[in-house]
Length: 187
Image 1 (cartoon, rainbow, N blue to C red):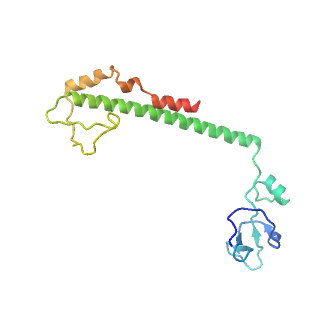
Image 2: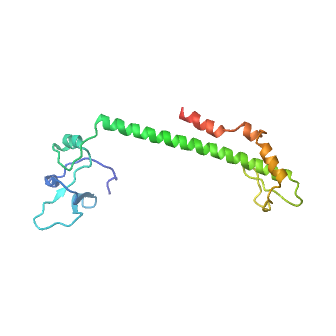
Image 3: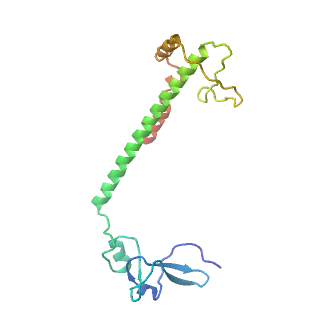
């Protein structure tokens, strides 16, 4: 027989006699007693006024809803205030989009470096050495594959790595697909 947990405006006889002030009471609806209850949320001294915080709204809304304002009620933002906040969030959004774009560029560069390194290690023809394929190199990598530590590349392998920067792999030809998709989403 409980009432649904919805929010509704209503009149609360006697409770609406409390003056607006610091939030030292909390109003709740007791569904079992079917009564609006005011409960103290801080200590009161004998003779101290019991006040109720009607709303967190700004002064224009408090005046419209309750017919008064109070020094503790903040002023409503002006159109200029709102425009400044919009502009601040736009700048923040653009900064984050730029940072995400740089992160995608860094990720693409790391993938190219990984592919170049794996290519060098695969082509070194090291006896008994097995290179596990990364997820970017193979979509069906076996979790049972034996993993070993790669030996340091020789000077000729370093030269091969440096020379491979001029060769384009299939991945490099498709470079920036994620970044391009990201830029497309923004427009």
